[in-house]
Image (cartoon, rainbow, N blue to C red; front, side, top):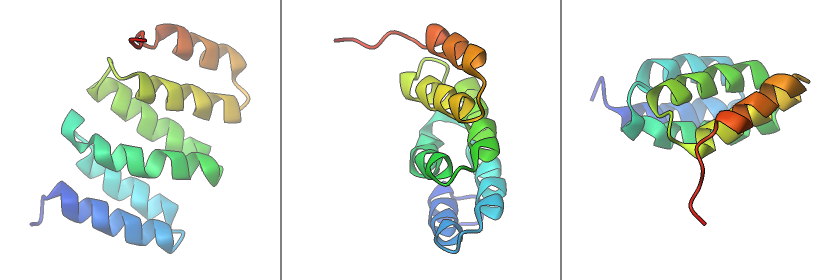
Length: 103
């Protein structure tokens, strides 16, 4: 259970509920190590963006892009974090690099 991503998911939810975003990110940085752990990413990324913890969101989105470069959602959230950091040029490049989504 010590290396179980589902335990990390639960603990991260608790940390986020306590508004301890930095600790949640540190925990997730350890456990988001393969594409299957994207459930953790999908949980916290929108929350980091909503609470304006864009530095954390940016770091996490870069990790997820490295792990799963063919995920449009990873690129989209990465661009969204860049926009919140007022880096329009980098956000446009990120969207341009994002994989096409089937209609």
